[in-house]
Image: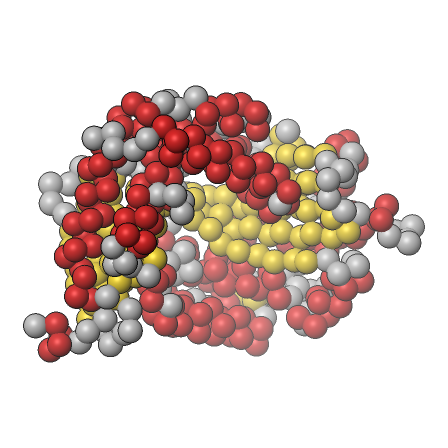
Length: 422
């Protein structure tokens, strides 16, 4: 429901959980120039505000809220940038108290959103520098996670270093170093006054009561926008390639393909099945043929996004097997394009996908994420409708999807140094 221009509320009443969760998402078009400022804004909002000026005081208030959990995050979703607040707390009907935990949570969020630890147009310098350094330290640590690091390098190849899509949503080290208490506060003000706001509440709640309480937070009307979400796929004539050498025990070989099937396509569910057969499940061809049958990979899997039209394969291999693995991965794709998979495999994978969907109904986080995505994409399938569409996918539909896949980028993190690899 619309609370006011640019501010929407979704209420999901359910008696399944003893906790109630509230998410507040500030949504704007992706703009890499704002990544660093907003990542530090998120850290400032999570750690302190004028009502709770120290992290310890904020934590004590969460304890008073019967062990509530609270956090912030920054996300990139296609062409959108999202700063998210989430609080989860016990419903008072399960507690020996007459206090409304919902009202307490709303009071907490009001302080977080509207009472930042700032004055004279700048965040508190001491707290700001601490949170800024924490963010810088995290970004500096990313190269230590070789699997994540390899994905980032592959994205840079695939998106030709377009910083809106190839870079970290936290910003670069140079950008983070340049953020000031004033620039971050200005980014906060712009977000507060202009971002589209999506609020979701899930729990044993009354919709009318929730609406009244949410209105007490104090949001104001703003220009309403419907921003595009999907990232257009660029047609490329050549495969981008990069080899990097580091002294490692395990090499990383990642491949990126374009698959221009988006969430609003009739082929969306066939693409879901294709990815599951290709590398998205333990029953997949990549898992069975690259990892198990040929013992060429420590891991081998694929993931597909119907927002970006990007299909990504990740493998952990021995350096000397690089060429073999590339060949076998592409052989699995060719096999699917040729219809080399049986009906039993399709039915087993359909059952796995449906069971995973049903299991997600027991996760508050997953339900809230789905609520946000459904609203962003303006798609609202019931669980039964979604499962029926999965079950209805034919073998030919999967083959038709596979034939649209095109290799676009290969990144190889070679675990041998350059002298050894020659």
